[in-house]
Image 1: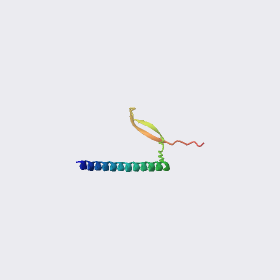
Image 2: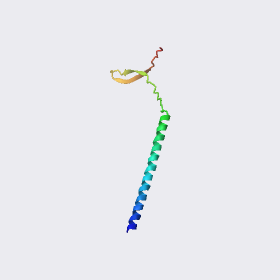
Image 3: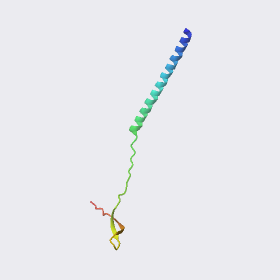
Length: 86
């Protein structure tokens, strides 16, 4: 009976030690990953995207009416703005 208890204790102790070693390996791997990410974050430059959207020009609308004065349509005209040079 004592021998059986001793063997089970040994097995349990081995399992505990193995799990502790595995946890230590995981901890070290996580630490090295975090250190690598910190190094790459400090070395890398941010990505800059310049998205230039052209300005829409001004438009002039003229209403077209029929004989009775009802609006029958619109006439759109683009107006180019003159840029002032300073």
